[in-house]
Amino acid sequence: MIASLVVYCVNKFVGFFLGPIGCVFVLLALAAVAAWKRWRRLAWLSGGAAAVVLYVFSTAWMTRLIGAPLEKDYLPSTPGVACGTIERVPDAEMICVLGGGMAHHETCGGFDMGPGADRVWQGVKLWKAMADAGMENVRISVSGAGVVTSTVPFMVACGVPEGSFVSFPDAKNTEDEARLIAASGVTHVALVTSAWHMRRAQLLFARAGLQVTPVAADFEMTLVAEAPLRFRDFLPVADVLSRNSAAVKEWIALLGYSLFW
Image 1 (tube, rainbow, N blue to C red):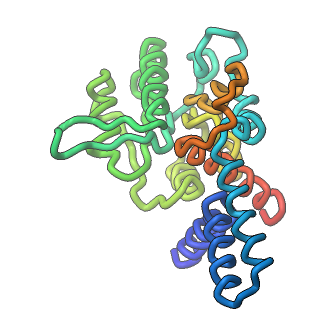
Image 2 (cartoon, one colour):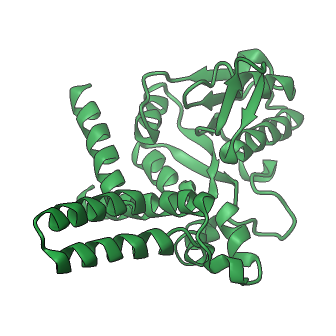
């Protein structure tokens, strides 16, 4: 438990400071110290580097370079046909929906569907396809904060029976969830997550000893890459910074796994 917590904290810490926002924070801190010490050249260089990093990773053209390649292996093999058709998961014992970007707004009494909510809808479609093929008893693993008040009620409202869900509240991240699912006796999962996260998630589940059928959703990076290049793709946008930060985190994690795991 302690070792898992340490690894979790280190991953979060390293991931932040190697990501765009963390780099900008470090560079601005260095610029402030250099200015205080009257090291003018270092202060200007650090401040300028922070501005460049912030600009570059806030633009859509960078998404084309670092985001779209994460998704290319999980695009539908047939144009116009959704991923995760029943023919691809005939033997899956569990549908695993990672995260989902769902929340429940207590004041308004409704669901809040974030950018990753495509995962939840994909999980619903996959369950219905499997149920139509006679596999209505397949279980659905859901993860993330607030799934009991958001993801599960939403999927129930879409027609999934309440008794179909399994959760692993002790899981702090994707690696923990893969390990706990494998320990429960499951051997084959239909893994549902965002396409940009699928490569790393599939790797973690496979290393936990699970047979994995990827069922990707949320192709937000590819949508950017497939659109015609426009002038606004070179303008900084806050939402794009968030998207590119997620892509950088995935590449850093994949590099780390290849070097140390």
